[in-house]
Image (cartoon, rainbow over all chains, first blue to last red; front, side):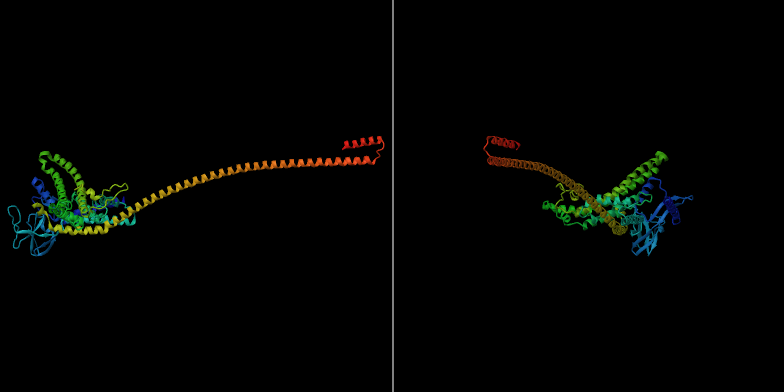
Length: 392
Length: 166
């Protein structure tokens, strides 16, 4: 009972906090703030897929016809021609078309399609060419605490809290209780189903920490992307690229002699084929593998977000042909089931990224031409390196 | 491709790299290492316990087999001892029977021999007594006057009656 009342209290406090955010919220009139036509839906979806500089919760129009945005601003950190510049994103007043100019350290900044541009010297406003590209401004190097960074920080904090508390439990007892009982099988799953079979019994221990971190990082971020907070962290190509490059660095650094031999001078093939194979193998190791990792995760999560939002948008786009009830019903049913599938995809993509990373690492540390282990009946025990061929 | 490259934010990439590095480091230090160590420890403990249980079971089986063997041995020994005792008993009985028979025979023979010798002694004694008597009679006859016939006849008669009395 106590717990329940505590939970209710916490929820109430959260609710109050959310409403009190209104005082921080910046209100301004935006004639085209509502989303109801097909073009607006397309624009909204594209906008959502991008990273944003403020944490936007929801918007509404008040009685006076003003568009109000509820959320909170995030710090903007820029490296400009004149050095470091920091300010809160609220200074842009929700402008995303390069109208509002913020001046810091003698540099002028504008926000254009979720990117911050620095105006060239002497320019007072952004001018555009026919394709709506800025002609007198360039992108500033942007280290801002964007919504994605907030998501990363949040997930990192959650992971640290959850798993360090699980780690602490083991000090006192052999079997964890409470939430730890949920986490332990997940850790075991990554270790026994991803790390161990793909890397092999001999080397898996060294890489399990990385694989566990990446698995939970991607999974929780994917799931957070399905919440109404609308994080799209694993749909940011910079984030997936970073993850893929981590895997690339790890398997390149830990690759053994056999691995490099197979890349640079493939044994067992005619000499004139060897240089050709080396080119292919090098491209595979340094471009194709990381590229497949980063694009797969990015594309799957982005596509998921696009599909879910498009199905929700049926509510507006089919309102004329199906009527309000029909369009809303269809949209609810479809988006509900797609969201269920997206929950599965969230896990699946985390699993695939981790498993492929483990596979690539396993290929780099595999020891060839070794004595195979034999079981008690004298049969060869099929180990990771033998089975690996079936997957590639 | 151009859109993708345009969407790529170098700043976010740098921030993400730093955060991910920090996260990996922190998670390995504070979570994965202790968790995996404890899991390994626990698994090793379980394996050990299972092996110990297995060993205890085989030990138990060995012990039981040993007990059974010892019991059987004891039973066989008892059987053997009983058999031996029976044999000894029977042998003793038959031995003593034989001995008794031999002894009896011997005693019988001795008795017969004694009887024979007694008989012989008695006959010899009789013979000597008859001789003595004959001599005494003869003496007496000689000492009495053997003049008259009557007296001689009387004497023989009395002598004969004497003998009859013997």
